[in-house]
Length: 464
Image 1 (cartoon, rainbow, N blue to C red):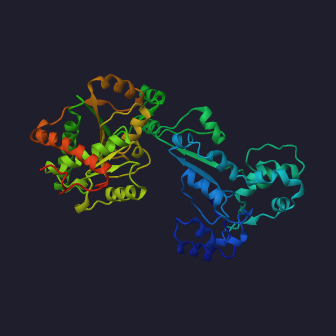
Image 2: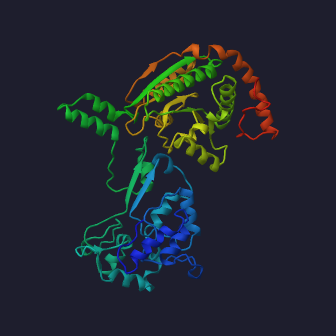
Image 3: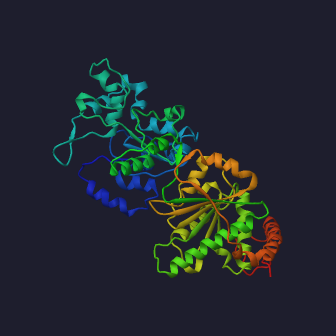
């Protein structure tokens, strides 16, 4: 959201905005110009200023503010940025896309009563405010979108009532509401994008642009660029992709061997004085229930095998509270030697929007069915030019299906790998005992003897 510049009290108001909790938007409105006072009622005042420069919100919470927060308005909106756009535009959360676009165009509220409303006419014809630089005018976004509704053209006798959302001629350069969509798997389906009302949209693919830049540096072009353009998705250049094949019974031990190998490599890097070494493995499963059971099994194995505390294995899914998830994210971003997380077991809720700079490897314990999900999972590592590894654990019958899915993705290649059996050779018997102990832990949780998030160190359920 954009606040209109100028005004005699702007400096004092700007200082005042730092005196309240930035997450409390009602306090922000009150501190700036008092628009949230109860005596003003829920009516939105047209014109004026926005008390917020940048607003970050989920679609549902944004709809709550539009419906319930006195003085809340999007009439000053200049830029609409949608992250994870392919998912959000598919969400029919109270028709949030259409409502945001409608709320940003305050002229919609005047259409039915324009003939009897003189306030709008006076506002449109009011003199332009000179900006602080003394060279330009301040025209707030409200004016642009009123003009786009055709009301200004009708007022000045023009037959052009087009609704293009910009101001022509009299008001200078057109500045429409700009919409920016970001995603690693952005849809190009015209039917889905039509909801956003895009005008002359531009599509940028960071991977293609990087390839073109490299080729221009080499003074040549390559057919590989065309191959990249035709692919649906792509993975980061720094990502090493591997797969390991095993039976269903072997999967937990194979996963343990992979995790122990990663932890050993991390410890070696730290011993060599590599301060930039990354030290977190993210394991993805196919469901919330699988996430919990696998996290509990790894906790039992981690303690019983003498690899560390059970707190080194954390679960991240919608089955735990938002407060607990936030605490886990803080532990991953700001690790403490006494409370360090080495392995994060997740459902696909973790595959988007989470930026954890310390992820060295992503392990697909359950292989995703869709290329889009695979891309987002792999995107938890090899971020911002760093290196990373993605390992898929496949059962025998899954290899062909996995390769077909991977062929839909550009860049990189998947290497076949084996595991270091010596890492788990001595824990096979311990694993069998832990599988039996897992059943007792699950039963204890169902009987509310322990909580699903309780640590298992030194408890009666820990194998001896």
